[in-house]
Image 1 (tube, rainbow, N blue to C red):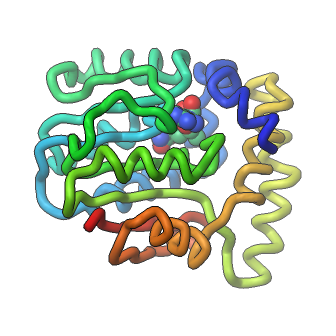
Image 2 (cartoon, rainbow, N blue to C red; image 1 turned 180 degrees about the vertical axis):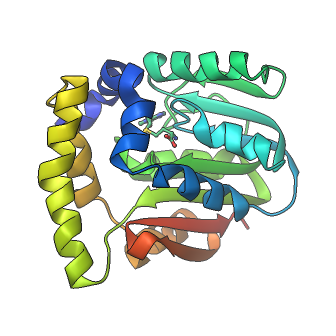
Length: 232
Ligand SMILES: C[S@@+](CC[C@H](N)C(=O)[O-])C[C@H]1O[C@@H](n2cnc3c(N)ncnc32)[C@H](O)[C@@H]1O
């Protein structure tokens, strides 16, 4: 897995043109609702929000739509994903509110205590070094800053887990391959979902980094989870 993760920027470059379409198609558009719910858990409007692993910027755009931040900085490793995001920002005329930077979140260029809040949507499981990424986010957040993570998890009910596994192991790679021709990418993605920590284990990780008051909200039978925590 570590070897795979080294190439994560290139991997997302290779699927960036089809990413949005496949995301919505493979999730039956549920991903849009999940992002809305994740943004909703942020408290009232803040000045500056960091969207880590912003990809094609759907989460950043949703933050603005819900009026949860004045200024958003989106960072991502993948030039291809950022270019797709920039196209959307240009189209929606949001250049004054959203700034995109090609950065590795494990080594951010920002000063300590720079942001009022931070989010990661479907990104943490791709970090090469989860601890390093989370520590950097902790560092750049202001005290009392909110941190919201939206990530895949595993359904609790056995019957749902059964169908979910068929979907993840068979259907998702097949559809991904058909549409994107990137066989490796759509085998890698389900693997990251299967192997990533979730629920209490992820809460423990947040606590270990220093975050406090961690809460969770399960979505769609636990297929995804929203984690909210605070930098003390
Ligand atoms: C599944 S996409 C999620 C994109 C977007 N947040 C969304 O909600 O659709 C994961 C993104 O994480 C980015 N990523 C992975 N590791 C990263 C890192 N260390 N630093 C910055 N971005 C990273 C990838 O390039 C990719 O664009």
